[in-house]
Length: 359
Image (tube, rainbow, N blue to C red; front, side, top):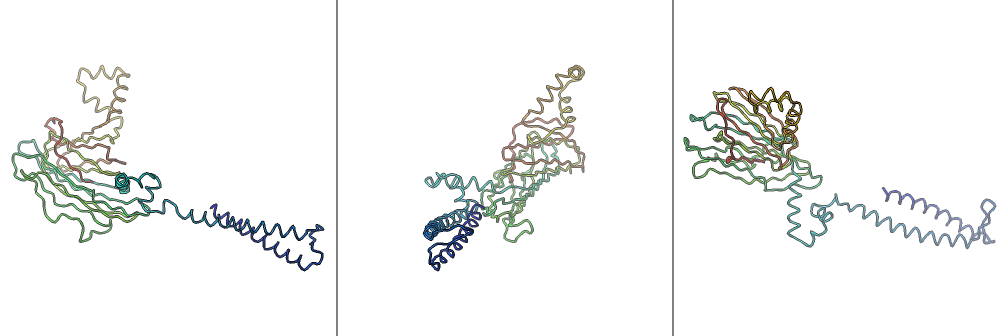
């Protein structure tokens, strides 16, 4: 904008110069050596002196204007990623390791998940009632939020680790892991798992590193499908590795028994009834009346529950029913757990060994 104004000013100034130059030529034709404008007599030497000074000014400001125009074209947002990093952190030019680290970290932030949905099916319970067979399929929409740069990474890792089960030789299977190049269609050369990976006694872990390249403001589809046995005494951990605008969990009970599903997350917002229900569930029949007669104790309990880092919601799901939980603006620092057990079985919460990380 400043360059535009300077250009307009120079044009006006040049027009005045041309006009005065014309006037100076009239002096040459005038034998008196002077010129009269509105009854004012102007000596030719005054006009010549002014023209010489004006010419110097035009040359000077034209040079400055050209330099400002060239500088304004070199904006950091128009540069490649490394040039932008150098603009923000000049020291990187002198430290290659720091430069590489910053490029990797900043680049990882450029890919977000606009929506991720995990469908968890409770397939069956074990005869000993200690394990439940889970089928988990996930679908995530990746997006490159760079305005001018490609997002290129091979750091998207899908990994599964399960505990052994005493009644089966096969602890689980992974049947689908891939990332597309677009949200519209699945290309033939995608990173799809070409076989069923079985998790057995001597090989109960699986990990796959996936490559993804996204053009500016473009998206891709990331999909995984697997099943495995889960100990009901252990919490099942989920996490995201990038900012996720919307995270949806659907849990369906396909077993023959009613099942309890407990969601745990610092992102869960409990309403008043849910908070009250959670407090009451921890009271004995003798404490119930005394507790609600003390309003200060009720308020303190509600505030304490609100300040807890990890909140839990438990749902009882009948056979054929499902429950849905939606979280927004989930980050890698957020926690999320699921624990499943039969309605008539009291769960014993302990440290989890089963772990699914699929973003």
